[in-house]
Image (cartoon, rainbow, N blue to C red):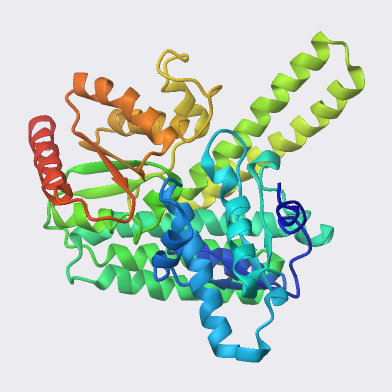
Length: 440
């Protein structure tokens, strides 16, 4: 393995550097940057999808599509910086932020491949890559001082749930707005107000002010709805987290479904973070059983302590998530997020799939089944072409939903325009509208 992969992909105090953040989510990324700014980190959300040609140039197209998109984003940004600063450009001033995961998903290898490619471009060889990992449930102690790490994680979690809430306000209001474009305009205004509040007061964890602000945004959004428009077919989106969250990569599939007469609910960012914490607890319970079986008392006691801490983290996340959704639900009937323990029960005691196998397939399969339980009229699986977890999802969901007569469509993306995509989506929406007519 190249030495730089070992030495220049690491966790360290990121203050004093320009931290480059991929814009995976239109609300989540700017809010995360605001949280980092509140803790004295110069965080920059990079322009997205403008450098896709760079991402494709340095890859073989066998990689997961988000790998190409994020690589293109960072090269495009650095090219702009180099042209702007000329001789003053110093790669040591930048840190590229690329989280990772454990397990079989190729996402765990993004930052390694990106490191090798950046090393091949002489001007960018000195840029460090930093990350958070699912392996320790996105612990931030290595990238911020210990006195700030816990507070930052709490703030970043709430900001993530607020990003989810902004999404769901859009999904609920936009298909029924009196004036076209008014919802997006309101949400963008609200987003910047949230960013300003977090940047100015985030270090003091101003949760009550954040809840009041998201509640006000929901109240204003509710006034944009034309109540004479009847509810439309409910469409649930599952799939790979980057593709379903990144409008440019999924060719704005949510707005397309809305234009064809649907109301969409997309799986959330918070769902994944809650899943990571849930999995941490499951792993610790397995370790404790193994320790007891092998009579490793010290290890068992250590893991019990870790389990207690993880349990507190899970309880905290549940509490904050409920507070955010409660603030919105005062004014707007958005869909609340699925609890992970509830999702696991949808798998019928492992007969459909098992959380033991892991990957996002756990969430996509159980999430789709939960949508159906909630009387949704169709399911869309959004994912990168050749994505393993989403291919598993498709293989399991298709026969189940066919038996239940639920419209279902796979929508893999790789940056190309599929000539039959529009017709497939229109056909899918026609089927969903027929189901709504039949059962509502």
